[in-house]
Amino acid sequence: MIYFDQSATSYPKLDCVKEAVQASFQIPGNANRSINIDMSRNIHRARKTIQTFFNCDHVIFNSGCTESLNTVIFGLCKPEDHVITTYAEHNSVLRPLYASKVNVSIVEHNQILESIQENTKMIVLSQCSNVTGEIYPLKEIGQYAKNHNIILVVDAAQSAGHIPIDMKEENIDILCFSGHKGLQGLSGIGGICINGEFDIKPLKYGGTGMDSYNTLEN
Image 1: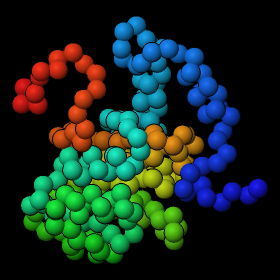
Image 2: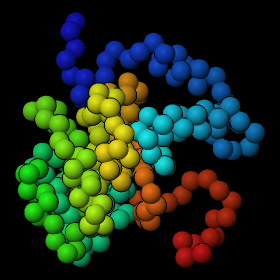
Image 3: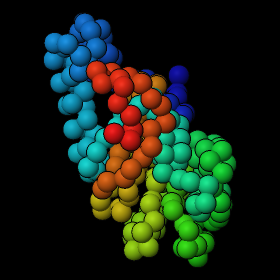
């Protein structure tokens, strides 16, 4: 069998991936709970690896690119904001933008800079297209966005693992990645890489911790 659909999900998985998954079943309990140091260390090691791989300040793990983009768009944008995106984006970008009620401009890549308005909060776009093979000029767009205090968010679902990404070099503020494509991982994993400090409102609430009665205002 010849498998061509690596941009949708990688196959076959590398032996080291299979071995790591199998080994994880031998570690009891949950990470960051009780005395389970081994699993916590594994997650910390993975976080540092991703941080180095993309050259970023912070890494947040979640279920993948769709959750990452939803978290970033809903967590940073308000209805009065203006967001620029392109005709080449997937539904994990477009549908959250529509649902967030922001003012959206969908343009060609060479029209991004001329589409900036006074209330432009964010530019969100893919690094490359898995349909046409185009690779977009993130560094130039990111530098212009930085000069105008606009957040550049990159959907790296199709590029992470296939194209080298240095977030600081490419002027990327936030990068959303999926683990099961070019990074050769499993389905249902991915995350958000962040350079700098952004006050992102959580998409979901709950999880671990003892201070259950604490509020966001505190």
